[in-house]
Image (cartoon, rainbow, N blue to C red; front, side, top):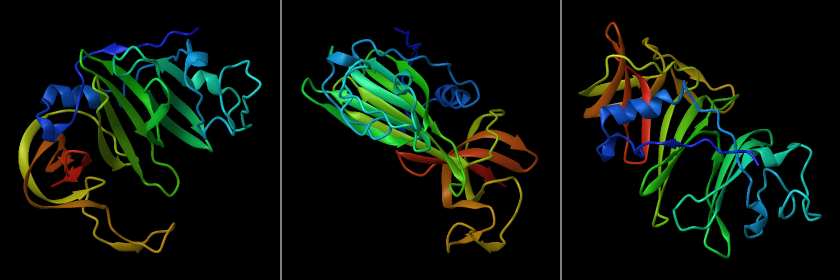
Length: 252
């Protein structure tokens, strides 16, 4: 069977939970230096029976099982699964990250001994698996496509007591996230998708929504953010909306 490459580092949450600048940099650097992850299906046949819409119209048990029904959209789903203990309870859990009608999707299942419980199911591709003493951290990237103009960088933290935390960073699809001149600062104003002032209102080609230039979010009061990069008077910042959600955008 194939081996799964793991990164043994400190688990990461994001900004509003006391994360250091170094930890933020480490997580964001994975966007441009993603790991070449290889999955391991050892023990798949011993897991509880399960269905997952990305790879089967029936119940998958094992590669040779007559109960396996694999749709033509996914020619070999097995290379996108990995069997791994995510919460340290000695029971193997399951991750799928691969094609799904027709975009990438990541599904995470926790094994309670009787059932595989789906605790995460969202578009995106696995970027890294990060193991520490008391938790497992999974980073996933959903890239913008078509009428979905924004990318989501999602972090799922699974603690040894099976508690799950999630954090999502959203940014405009073609934003180049380079980390330079990192600093914490307080700021307010209009967060934009590009380093230019564009307030022109236009109709969205994909909906009836009216888009206001390159506006991403409005920061109404001085808020602590993390500057990632600076070009002249423009700053690329990480703006925490709340404990679960953040934006990356430009502000002047």
